[in-house]
Image (cartoon, rainbow, N blue to C red; front, side, top):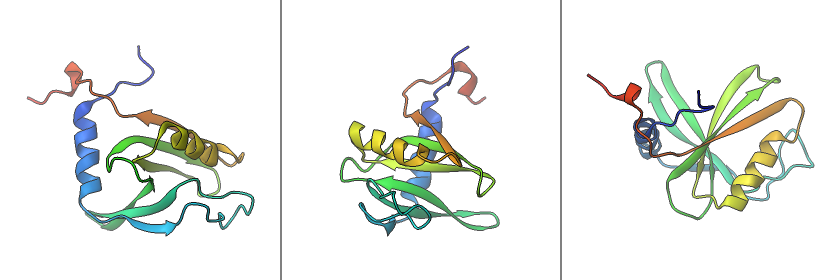
Length: 128
């Protein structure tokens, strides 16, 4: 069994959610993190609001100046907030992706994994 089964249809849905709204920067590159003064945001960070059945839910985004496309998502397990958080990585170079991963994993209270965009369409993803 593969560690992760990629699905191009999943990425189509992610692209659609991202394209629904405008990106709003909340922390510019180099801004100090509010809870960890030794941490600085490696790229711009902000959100795109999406509409859900029970109201607005922001999609958190790390964004750089590259291609305006989500190339990966980071899934974070956050002990302080007692939650899983999903963050989209948009337009980042490989070096910037590594900087974001370091940023998201540099405390003992939050750890993250990265899921890179793929092009596979597995048989189980086909609809009837």
